[in-house]
Amino acid sequence: MKAQESGKKVVTAAVVERDGKVLVARRKAGLVAAGLWEFPGGKLEEGEDPRRGLERELSEELGVGARAGQHLCTVPFSGPLKSFELVVYRTELLSDDFRMTDHDEIRWLAPAEMDEGVFSKPDRPVVRLLAGRGEPEDGLRTEGEPE
Image (tube, rainbow, N blue to C red; front, side):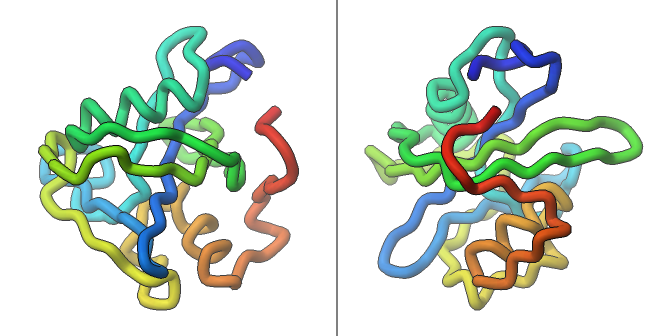
């Protein structure tokens, strides 16, 4: 699947796991969803492969090299201002030299430590999935590749 091929806007996110913990980042003041935590990633460019787009976004926003791997889930999101699909991949960091542009803090949290209420709305079903609390009404698709 490439960005916007299906007419749907696509946003990617990375689940980076290390020693039982997952990398999360807090959006800095002045940005959409400021102060909320998220799994890092971002919008795809026209025609961009989701994995390559995620790797590009991690480089631009966190200053790290990364390799996007297995598709974890897809979350359809519809809000008052925009609708998109959040496509989430298990991702490996190739460096740890963080340089944040869109975030003011990063943390490594165990899924059980994550409070979904402090995450952006599209990321909350992913928090529930990681913590083993996913619900069918979340709309998550976890089988195979994103549509």
